[in-house]
Image (cartoon, rainbow, N blue to C red; front, side, top):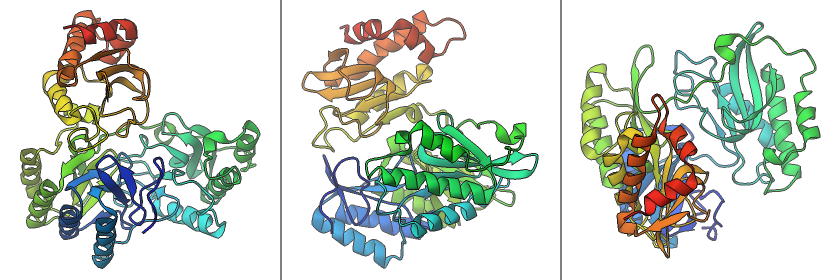
Length: 445
């Protein structure tokens, strides 16, 4: 077993990372999913060797928490004995419905495999940092628009057939476009971009490439770019992974984990129900969800109801999907506030104004949501601080006792309701009100 990984690295199964509640490991099955029985056995192993908390990340990986060095080694041995092959090396990610979605523009799996081979042939895996990633998106009902990547390829319909839009350094909305090219050229551009990143060192990403390098990549495909047809060229909006998805001859049911985390015994209960109903596969889905495949159409409501009873997220409108919350106290030794209790209270009382991301962080590390959020409650020595439009690492604009943080947000919610113009979103209203006024309202007794 390797030494503890530093924060910011990827805590693979063979190299756990130290967190506030012990060691954490992450695994991503090669097949993209597990049978219900395998998921049950994995959750039972999490109960035996960890603290019983399992997570699905924003990128669709499984995390098991609360391990020791000894128990992490035992867990790794059990995963190997179960025959669960996990991905290693540079992540080249495809969507959860890749190859089975009748609405996707192209099956992204062959392209993804070509890129993996290109990475291997170029010897890039050991030269690139642990956070470098590639996305290959075939489009359809569950795109990867919300997933950030160093290189992203999206299938696109053009006047000469299906091509691949290549972009770098961002998600489906923010990535910088480079080219629209055929399969071979797109693959070459992707691998060339990774070569350039590798030359800059293991801390580098495509955001660090120079303008000249980006222009070089964009000019790789020397022919004039084809015209992109409207239905294939528009950037698709992010679709929630929670709900029902038609697969032509069958369907899939997406069920979310509240704040990306659930006790292993509840995952066991849901997987047992899925097994009894005839589900054949459970896939891990970006957006902190599980996708159930293979169950008969008449079983979907029963599985949905079981998930709701167990506390899973069963509707894309659930306000918990707008809140990012780490384990907090008492689960995490680094936490200063009871994040999940605060999040639950806010979701129950203020669902009507949650059209923005609210982050509840036990400490300034901001593990649950590293990027900026409209509002962040962060635990610290002075209680529960409120950060406006920034990350958990920013200096809070105001504080109140940790046990009373939810009431502070309720005061902010009341201000939004009274100040919001007709048709204005809560997020836009927050921007208009400004950090000083929001913080003052949050602090009020």
